[in-house]
Image 1 (cartoon, rainbow, N blue to C red):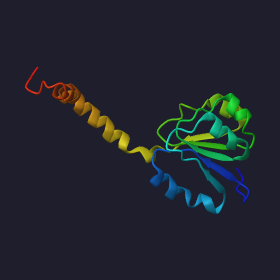
Image 2: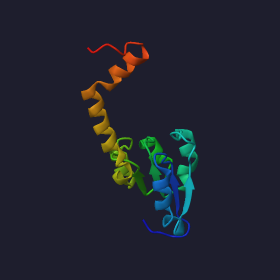
Image 3: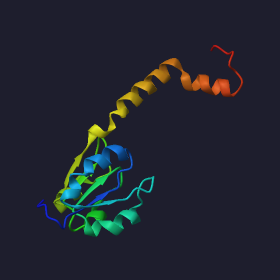
Amino acid sequence: MKVSSCNRALVTSYYDRAATDSALVPLEKVAEVVRLFPGRRVTRGEMMEHLPHVDAVLISDEVFDAAVFQEAPRLGMICADGVGVNSVDLDAATRAGVIVNNAPFVHEANGDFTIGLILALLRRIVAADRGVRAGRWNERK
């Protein structure tokens, strides 16, 4: 994708604004960056308002299917904030000539969370919590 002063990027990622905001500073030198941060997943309608006018998007988990690609003729790249690109129809993206990648470095907390869940299961923390809340803190089953 050729970079020019008229390029526009849409950011819908809501997972880690501190990480994405600092990473977007260099992009702002070569493109207009439109940020949608409603504090939740961006709706399809909100996203579709901007897609006809953007060259690249940084998404969280918004769905990009064949219909979306038809409405985004300028789109050349999708970068998914996270470890996968499950919400993007890769066949439709290929047909549209759109490059799809991801940014897994943003989510190192996923590993911590996974280990925490394993420990919670091994130590039966959820069951113990429910017991305490129900007034059964002396049960040792």
